[in-house]
Image 1 (cartoon, rainbow, N blue to C red):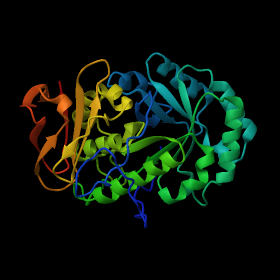
Image 2 (image 1 turned 90 degrees about the horizontal axis):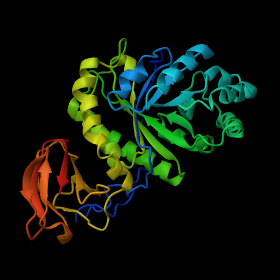
Image 3 (image 1 turned 120 degrees about the horizontal axis):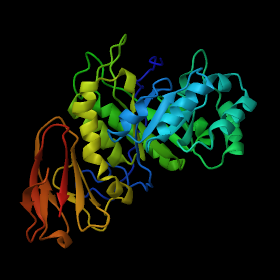
Length: 375
């Protein structure tokens, strides 16, 4: 059971936010990242353990389509059983290479592992190592992981290789040992009040996604979805989870994973995580297609982020609006004239008609996220 994970990072000095061409507010035009190009699949996944072979069927029914099961030192029979259970569902597996093979520099063992499972239909990608930059007593060498990455590609060129990190400033030396960059930061702890962590988390997320952009890596964000048994981590509140979820989407993540299923709470999953997934899943094609830059959005408050996404094969649009402050804000969203005459709905209820000026007024509570449709 892997629960010893350091989740708070030191705030990175010299942080610079990337510019944005999509948020047209006069006070702060460089606050948000540019529109990253994404491609399917956009995964939503759980971390779990290879022994929990009942999880694929349970998770698949809740909109989960990716699992990262910790392999540890389990037998090939248990790995095969988990993969075969996944085969009965649409779920794909980010398969961890046993850490002992990496740590002992057993390149032939790594190649044998890849050959054994590379043709299994459930295997999507290889999970090379978990937080190599903070491995005790010393970090895993970037040169070693580059060597292992090369060995993986010699056996299987078709599947991407993933690495997950917590210390952003340590990532760059590992760039040539991965295709997928993952980042985990779990800011919700006992004694840390709701959203006390938000400024640091947002800046750090923008930093790591900018690095993924520069290095041309797919980016998966790992979001806190657990409470500690013997630690002081708490589950995020519903507002905190939705904020982390949609902040990741708007910032440009190519998928989201949740840590970790066996330390989560069934009631929390049913009331917080799975409803958020259900709400979002229908809009994944719009998110992947990307923001509609031909219809720029203007907002009269610099602390509100609003993005407009065309929904493929329809004449509808998705609007995601996020309040990045601790205060309730009333604001006006102004769209282009090409959308005049349409209506804006929230939870299937009409809230505004876009008359000749193609604008509408709305309100967001502190750190609230709302999804609107323009139809």
